[in-house]
Length: 146
Image 1 (cartoon, one colour):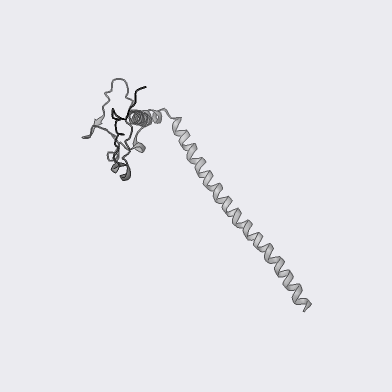
Image 2 (cartoon, rainbow, N blue to C red):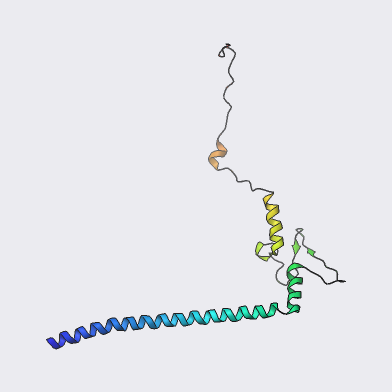
């Protein structure tokens, strides 16, 4: 009986230790995955930084995002049937006027225009059915002169 009690106590103590060991291993696996993800992000950002040090990449970005042209070139914009500027990028014609497809200066200008035109909120059905009548005008017999 004493042997069974001793073995069960040892088993219980090892189970707790084993649980802690397994928890630590899973934490280490999560930490390794986080490290790998952050290293991939760092590599991607270093690649982007290297691209921005290239003058040809900077010229390309200025042409695409800002619409800049080189001296002697003629710049133009394509206007759609709705009167909005259509982007020259392939696949971006649909929804080119959505805020996520606009450049920062187009979003700034559209927000300025939207600020000049407030949105009218329709009245609820209860307010629309109310009829406001002015109070009756006082008659000459009810007014007293002092």
